Image (cartoon, rainbow, N blue to C red; front, top):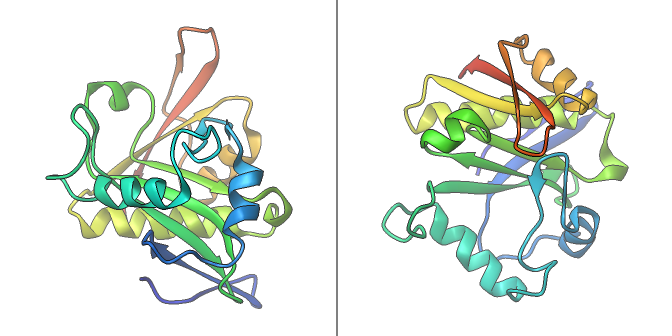
Length: 183
């Protein structure tokens, strides 16, 4: 768990590593996320592939290199909790990059519930995720974002980076690549 951080002088939030503890508001978050949005994939709970408990255990296991699924980069998933301990988002922090993630995917993916956007949470979530990445030894983070996702680009720029390069996915969608020094 990470300590509390205050946003715009009055709101606070923190990251908490995913566990079997189900935070308040999780059903709303998962319903809001659905199948995914803006490059942040949905969950196997939404698709009905796994129960909530199975999904949580799978995410916990992905943080342990010895338990991560073959062919996948291990990652830690964090809940984003607001001042009332309600979950308002989630963050995935990949511990390293394989060749595929170096091209498209990067180290960090974040999602903020739609009703909590435009309140400063995204910028702070990315800053906290960068600090988590630094704890595991990474000095730079690759963030990739769809070029039509203006809000996420502003979050990245708010953390001190400008676009370094662009790519195009197989379906023709343009994405940007940003390298950010970890805190």
